[in-house]
Image (cartoon, rainbow over all chains, first blue to last red; front, top):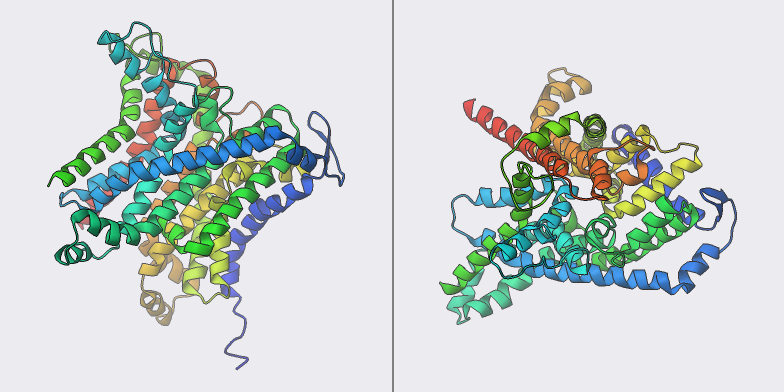
Length: 289
Length: 260
């Protein structure tokens, strides 16, 4: 018996480089930011080892931080809901089309992942900016003399986020739609359902895992961002990630940066945990590959 | 069916939403105007010429390329080894290990970046190219693991067992049987890793050494002023590299596999 369950070291040799790297470069830093959040920031970029709750007290009492957390969740929810609304129908179309070049539609969906994130974000300045396409057309048509200001506000940030994260949503929904037995909807129809009923009672519930996985991805990715608001937003359109960026890059207040980072990690971790209680993480792995 | 037509139109509109901004960048790269926006005043290649004369951008390009290639190499190597272990051996706690290997995706990138930065600083390793490389490798690793694992599951164990029974040692078996069969996934994983590294900005801003820029951080810095026509030209080049190269690789792979 003992022989059969003897320890086989071979897989561990193969795993050790990756696991060591993850332990040292991901897990240890995550633990370390918790420790670091108790340090004191003495001067620009100068910290003192300490165990005090000053940073946490700031975080818990300063309404500025609460406001940022609220704004971040609000933004993430708006982007997620809009992405679900925008993404579900194209996913449904791709899954159900008889179009012979379905692979082309899928390829077009994956292509944006390869187009540089910063370029895609910036491109909205060309669409909505004062010298952008929309204003160009409006002025050309004579509908307006002065360019209409559409940029550097919350709307522009939302559009930028949706543009970057929508493919995640569509792909996830598509994968789960594709896994549904094609005969179910016609079966429901023959039992007297209207097309809409058949969709609502059969297809939609069965595609919920994909919708949920896509939503989780979009939510977490949005809530962790800070670059899009800097490029497309105005001074008031900051997210929690922007506070981290300011603390670490501008103010060189690393203990506060660590405190804020840990808070973001904790809050989004909570979201993921709640999600996995209901859906499990398997769908998410499937989605990522 | 009317509903189906509506769905079709909706889908087309969403695709336009996805691609119009990119198309606009590609178009404006050839605009001869001194400003980076509309209206289009004429066709010109001068912004590309300007681009190649811009030393800061060229240096950023070099940094990004080297970083991307090295990231692809390290992430793919680590990813293949780990996948082999997970697919070919009975490992206790497999699910936990997979979750651990995927964990860099589950952690918000901003947090990942700040964590690693502060941790390595504490170990007296300031921002440097090495930190960037280590960080990018971590960000790319989960994707390589997922791609390689998926393919490895599909390669039958019997080939390897046959090689072993014919007297090949494990290393020979790997290099002469498993790796050739795994090559498409290795290639895809490496390309994936390269693109992820080449495109990364969120974490790179935190990790780059002072004065050193990658292409995305360079663009980010330039955007602080205004959208210059040079950025459009740079965007054109970026899109051609990150979209064109994988497409061409995919096309070539198809072409050769058909020829055989």
